[in-house]
Image (cartoon, rainbow, N blue to C red; front, side):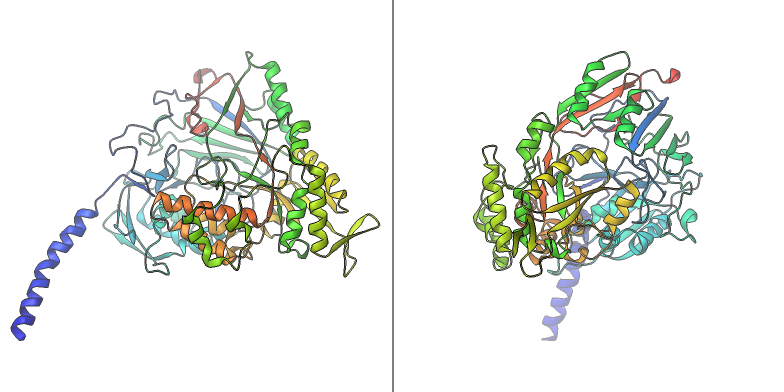
Length: 609
């Protein structure tokens, strides 16, 4: 027996080096990582497609923005950061370990990290910081900066950052330039395949600049980063100026070739859209994406000219779901029948014909204009995901295709109003002296729609008139951007105009948008206050999808569930791009499959501008 045992131990011991060698073969340094597809660009690629590698450097780009800003810390919920620092605009000051590819669903390439290693099961990832990387003050970017960034954003960052980065089990320094992130297991014992990419996108901030400061407090300090630009001028709420760094360490990286071509970028802020429009017409800034169809007609009258040119085309990118979002935390909107009734009062076809020249299409999906948008009846694969929640979700999710109320152009609007009246009556509301009141208490059905842009009032007031036909009182209130954002972050509203954007590869952000834990977390984007086990399950399923097919199926199922919940009134979208710009600017060839990026534009004659 002892001989057999010794032989068995010897056999296993002999195998161990072979197993270790096999694992080592699987884990190799690489320049990029993808969620599901193969990486498009090889290790020795010269630059991304869609850029001009020979673009001249120089000149000043002048931008105009409606709104205000009161903080240069874009990583917390307090305050509003300016364009250029905002996480939703081009990264000019702060950089990530990896950069997202502009023409792949979810592939990242080395940025601050010159290379990476990743476990086959995605249980860990190692980033190797580029030794050439420097902060704007000349100090090197170190692995310690990365660890500090992770710990700071995990403990003090915005709610979505805290949620995502809490899924990291531990962080270790390895070698001179390496940082190893080890991830927690999920409930099923596997690892979330998206986590290595989410950590790669994390902004890295300088430890020597932020350490010892109150990170959760708003500030207008001239923050520094490792990016191509630095702040050189700032007038709170009115103006910010960025200057390109002559010593920028990453100028020759393949991901940066053909980009960051302006010596200066100035951003002027305007309180109101009409003021901003007039400022553009008078030449105060260089680039305007015009959304108002009637104003586009005006621009065409003076373009082309010696002063302005226009880009106009139909893009093939995801579009936001624009909505009137109802706060289901409010008693008045808790009943799904009530929320659906209000949808029947929205007369999209009349608005589109009379206000928008018929140019808009009706939103019907949170993943509009992508393969992730649900179509027709649910497939067997979708039903398999939804079936465990049959008794918790609307039966229509399982049995019917979804379309917004009054979706078809042939829809009878008056019949829709009758349907709305029946739903309201069923939910305990009835007309008394022309006012819709709760049957038991006599309380009138009255609420406030909160806006931040006067240009949105025209549609809102038309909607209010339609609701009045049902006896509903909707007051329209327009706030300035700062007040609006403060109330939105605290869920202090009845209804808001809001748009959600979902890319081609959604993941962890879905729980931030729709997860039950986020419904009561101030600063999250779960504005409707959705609390649903089925939604939570599907958000997690999508984030953990191991194949593109799983991601698409999960997205279809989630899309149906959200739309049938009637948490929002879908509005409209126009997938036509209309941009007017000063003739002194030049840009790469337009590709309908790629978003316009000002980072790739340049000045035609930079020495004279």
